[in-house]
Length: 485
Figure (cartoon, rainbow, N blue to C red):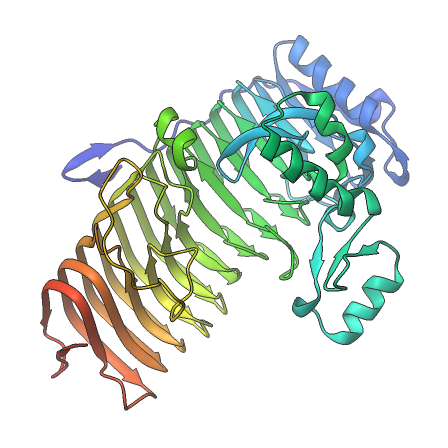
């Protein structure tokens, strides 16, 4: 049980799946790494579902396949020694209506795809590889010259500036086609077929599912986000590994979007974008749906690389609330605990508690609240004057952080609230950080900083600097003081 504002709520229900077993080899699948096994594996999944459910086993071997459709009351078990390798040929992946980055639209079908299911699991100790190198663009500045030379020599196409590599001309040209169709308001599937190579899928897409279990496998090398449950309830994610190349574009690890009652525990992430991310739709579409992410527990997880360790936003227009994060470790992430949004999102983020967090070698901020996510510090308009508060104004409030240790970061804590809607009721207790600069607060009301220990390299700037802040209390913090700038 977890405690949310004094009220207890149960941890997620686990799937109920019959004890029948189906082996993909009985349906003609060949694990030689050369034969395309899509039809055979899908036949095993379909037969299992038609029989009332059970476990579909993929044994040791290399299994090349196209996209697979999951079913209710089914456990896809990828055994130790099995490598499921999804083919990179975009012609194998039909366009389906889906959601990505908070918006609905046409995308290529996910390699692992499920809609409206109940009691579904993916288990085992094997590896599931999304074949992402055949989909993703790569930016030159993210690679060494030797890596870039090898990549461009392997084939593919460069953009006109020679700064972005695309795996195919169809993918390169697909971006322009897609943007034009979006501007024109085009919605037909047929029109988007010309941009199919650009519409790279997430590795696992589960939509509107109930009682979901991911336990054991390694999920890696996704075309876009890796794991994306959306609008799901009763989700358990434990003892999995998520790996994407550090340079992978949109290479998120786990994105829980508009999900309720989820547990993520004992998992590791090494990815190219945000590692564990909570979302709930984007802008007007997300506000109209109004489905929050809520009652979520994240504990005993490790992040080795990512833009953020645990992240809320920036697509949070349906709200995020009742979140508990405990005993997590971030090593070398760009940011540790990351909260982000921007004008236009709307939505409310509240009742967040994060405790017992360890960080080392953080590139930017150990803890970041950035409501100017699409702006850049120091740029024109960055600290602009208030604008009217509307339904498009994001709200972040009632957030508690405690027992946080960071050894190495550029900034210990950054708060960038909106002038018209300051970050409100933030409490940080027992926070120890070694960083280049200390705490920077902008547009925040009712902040409690209790038991803060800072070791900073930068001596010219104040260790705790506040701008446009109201009611900032700093106690039990070894002589630190708040300097108004």
